[in-house]
Amino acid sequence: MTLGSKIREMRLMQGISLTELAKKTNLSQSFISQIERDLNNPSISSLRDICAVLKIPMFQLFVEGGDTGEILVRKDKRRIVTFPGNLKYEILTPTLNKAIGVMQIELKPGMSTESLPHEQEGEECVLVLEGEIAVKINQDEYQLNAGDLLYYSSIWQHLFINKSAEVARVLVVAAPPNI
Figure 1 (cartoon, rainbow, N blue to C red):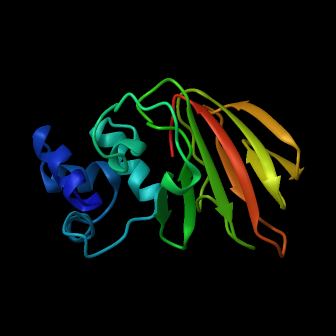
Figure 2: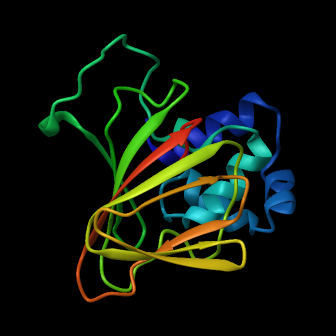
Figure 3: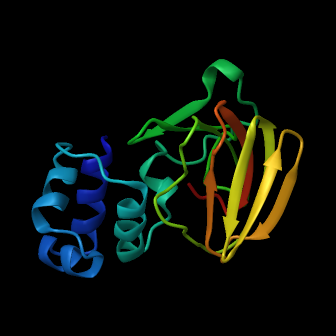
């Protein structure tokens, strides 16, 4: 099932009209219709807005099926989620339907995880594996280099930015899982 068809299915299951979803997200009806027909790729912030109205965690749009009971994920079997702008998340845990999710994010030079900081319920821990990033949390900014770890409440607005000329790889542990 595609991203757009999942959004449409969730919307229809909840009895939310396209007009109502557009009004509550401040997105146009035509844009949402294009997303649902897989004719347009939404930004991460647009997806967050849609998921907030649908009252679903964003990761639910990217996982197939439920908990398979698997406990091992081989490197070549990781699920990869790529967002517009080539922001890449590798899902390292067997499922995102548990209490904790582990992801690896690849940030190319000049790339950020979103255009605006976001927040959600829970806690996050970020470990820079390679390169360096800036993490904005509320009004503060933290410069992290390889090996540095930052632990914070994810209800605080946060955003990762790669201001360097090198690719950065970041390990994120989130409870509950979120993308």
